[in-house]
Image 1 (cartoon, rainbow, N blue to C red):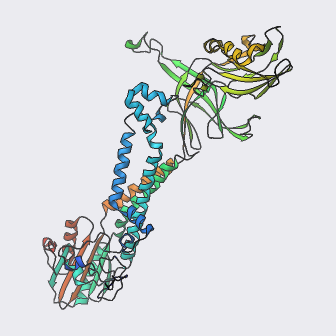
Image 2: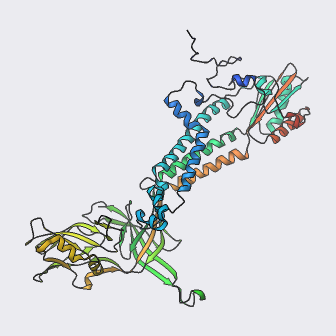
Image 3: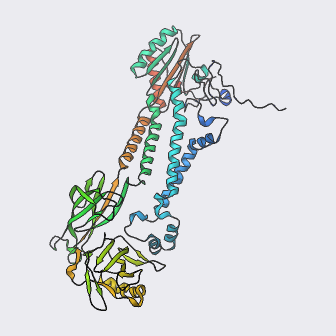
Length: 562
């Protein structure tokens, strides 16, 4: 029979300490445990103090394989590169979110040709909201979390349980090494060396003739603080896609109306819109008589919050005023994270409501008027013996590719209403009737022909506006950019934590000095994560304080000593 490999490796060090599987340097004395490290020359790998990490386990299950995948720095780099390439694809053409009221299915083809159509078909016109881009961000976040946990927990354990007396091989294979004869009393000499080290900010521990001096350990956590900041940053970016946490919409507010802000309980009313233009005397000569430029335009806005009947279409919502502000360019209305910016206007009158009258086209008999609001019409109207039930509403009437009626935008540019009329003289199921309030729309879309097809030969009821006093127009429309970003404070918090981690990692160095005196021989080893020249100079200066004159260049351990 072929002997099986042992299930558990013998990881016990010569000093008697039992190390976890995967340990490179003994947790107690620092002696190399890896077979390759035992016979190698040169400096020891001290990146994580040789501690065992979960990703180094020999026997691995499914969870361990997933953990190893995300704990790999190489995988993290690949994910970041792929995400950057995806971000670059999203910048080839403008994203859909940068436009106001466009049909993306036709816009990219008409504007950018075949390349634009392919761009839209591949879904790149909304790259940053796509499932694959969000998945990449989630994977980067998972990699940051697992990479950090895989390293920071064992490293914390190793640094907080450091032993003072280290193995000779550990000391002589550091990058800074001194081996020198010493005739003085070992313990007295070590005690004397402690004082200049403490004056330089080192925390000193001694154990007989052995010493450990350490300072600025906190700088080792700099990269992991950066990871925490990046994780918070990514979570905040992903949270911006949740309902209610982020909004960036351009909305129209006709003068005199209180319009609901989508996905919120707020209503905004444009009480008065004012625009002032530059006079000819104020205009530069090259623009006189050629352009009309606005000097000032502002919206006297009132923000309301719905307190009752907010979702009941049959009842008027109860509104309470919460803010009032004259919105100008760069002077938005601001309330609890909601900001309303002035960005455009339209002085074309906007139809708000009409009061049509139901008329018998055969006899001329009128059955009464009713008020038809363009934005929030009632669902049922009673005029004489007839009942009109609103079946469909189109704010901006048009036909799609299949010839079906659709609303091209949420603004009342070409409003149309489909009613079902029931009453005397009509079939039991009633008569369908299309109504266009604007005369220009009646002619363009041929209201009479549509209704003849809907009602057949028995059609005799029509809706008419008898007097222009029955028509209500808004004098102008103010276009506002409504922004809500409740995740932004967390974005800035994450960015601030990243900066803190950068400062910790760049402006301080974790410096450690180990030494032991045995058989009248001093063996010193030192390690830092950066600025080795300053570290050697500091060690030489400290040794000079105890009358041990050392050239700082001689401390550089080029090849290591056995």
